[in-house]
Amino acid sequence: MVDHNYYFSSKQYKRRGYRHKVPLLLISLALILVLLLLYYRFFFNNANIILAHYAQVIDGFEAKGLVIREERVRYSPYSGYIVLRKKEGERVDYGNEVIRIDDQHLYNYRPGLISYSSDGLEEVLRPDRLAEMTIKDFRQARRDFNQLVNGNYLKKGQAAFRIIDNNQMYVVIKTEAIEVERYRINETVFFQSDQYDYGLIDGRVAHKIVSGEQGLIIVALNLFVKEWLNLRWLDLKFIKNIYRGIVIPRKAIFTQPEGEGVLIYQPDGTYSFREIRIVNGNADEVVVNGVEVGESVIENPAAVNFGREG
Image 1: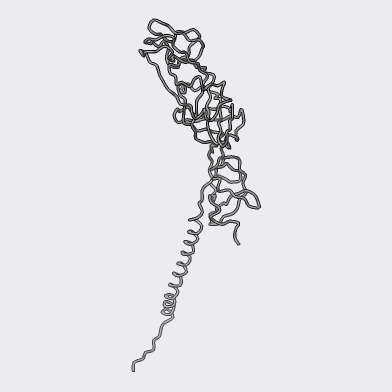
Image 2 (image 1 turned 180 degrees about the vertical axis):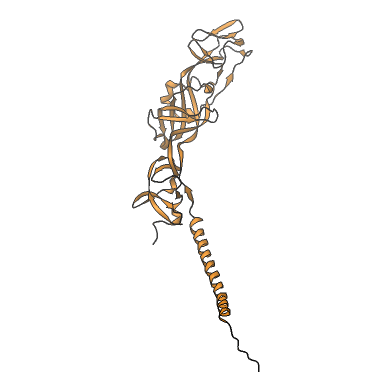
């Protein structure tokens, strides 16, 4: 008779028991991995984490600027071919000969910078009329530009040259009325234009005009920009202020019973509320106290449902 009983040594038994334990270990590891993936998808796929960093925040907006100068046009009393006696933009004194028309001579009647161009707006857009300027005036400021060069034929009554006071230059900005109200008369503001790499140009708010939902901010520049001598319109960035410090997104900030703050993400995967103080900023970014450079901040705290459980 064949003996069907099997006998195992203790080592064989242990090895067989170990084989039973291996699948359980793999299952446990797989469950942990699934849980981590679920946590990652729930938290990280919804919450954006950014690093607080030291930077500058510009409180400003892009706009069209209307340039206004103190300038007077001299119209020709003669007709004929011209010879320009001065360079465009050159400073001239009272009584200098500035243009010759055939055998006639024209002299300037006031000191300043000379220009042989005109756009037909010189008598309309004047510094002494800025306080009464309207949004309609701003919109209808269309120029008819003309530049004289040596040898041109000049007709009687045509603009011959301009004399510009290089101590006065204004820029008019149209924006929303609510934005205009943020500024004070004589407040210092800044311009920056890519059309002319002049860096930051500062000035002061000379006039504010509001009509309905729109308004004008009229700024007297502290610097006469010679490159804008013949310019009427320019694309610029209008800057109320520049703030420097530790910067985070404004939308990262929310209010709890403890006060205004942010969620700080910890290296162990948890997060906690941190009260902060806003120093200043714009609609998108703010400079704050209460967060250190390099700390991880949750940009969209609503995604983690903080403070609304239960």
